[in-house]
Image 1 (cartoon, helix red, strand yellow):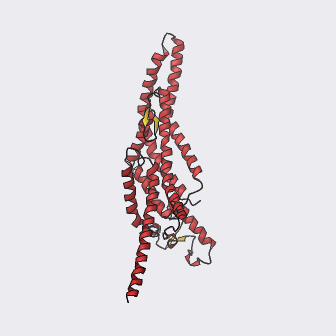
Image 2 (cartoon, helix red, strand yellow; image 1 turned 90 degrees about the vertical axis):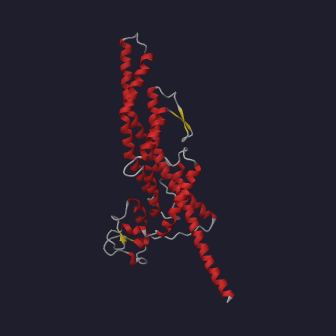
Image 3 (tube, one colour; image 1 turned 180 degrees about the vertical axis):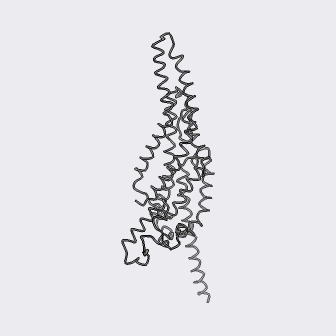
Amino acid sequence: MDGFIDDVSGFWTRQLLDVAVRHFYLFILIAIRLSGLFAVGPIFSQTTIPINIRVLLVLTLGFVLTPVVQQGAGQDIAKHDRNQDGFLSESEVPPFLQGRFQSLADSLNDSPNEDAELQHPSHPAVPVSAFSSFFLAPETLTELLRDIAAEFSLGFLLGLGVTVFLSGLQLAGQLIDQQLGLEFGSVVNPDLQGGASISSQTFFLLGGVCLLVMTPLNGHLMMLSALFETFEAMPVGEAFLFSDAHILFTELIQKSLLLAVQVAAPIMATMGLVTISMGFLGHSVPQINQLVVGFPVRSLAGMLVLSLTLSGTGRYVVDSVPTVINDIQLAITSYL
């Protein structure tokens, strides 16, 4: 009798230990996916926020998300089934799930005999049950390192993409200061670990403020929401490094340069007109000292135009950031 009790207790002990280990690995991988965003994302990665606060916030979010991700595996997908027929059609699938939907649809089409009971009778669709997933703890160190790299890359790419786009504001500030003659008044930007001109730092802070006051959802919450939705598109343990990251960042750099040119264009156009006017004035009245008169005129005209266009810069950032976040989310969940 004692041996039977020992066998039963040993069996349940192993089962509980396996469940605890699986939940622990799940928590670690969720926290690593979040830490990628907190490592380089705007607002989250600022050095003004102590590192221990950021670590505590990542661990807290991971602790909250772990039971939700575990219990919602395959169940959250059912909310997209509007007609409640047990199948998801392409029109019912949200954009961030299109990649996984196409992957499952292709796999079902490749094996029609085995999964014939899963085929929708009237139109091509994927059963809701096909989206279910069960997390398996990595068995080797190689698998664990691979999962860590893949999970970290998802949050890292999301945060880095938004940061790359907003870096166009700093480039615009440098272009403006070169035109206004304020390049010598550089200050230290602790977030980039380097120098920054006065206008660059101003636009950098403006971009952070715009993220925090965006409507209807703040920019930092929008980034977190986009990252949370990737748990449906790429369950924990099934994430991978997509091969088209260079294409994504090429497009983001183009958008960043476009942002810099659009922000600095009014100042550069004004400075061009001022330079031409001062050239005509110097040719007409040679007695005027161009160095004495030109610098205050350029500064006054530049500050006036900058004050008139500053609100438009904030409006453009608020309108562009959601599109950038959505493009990055679709790229990392595209299953290419």
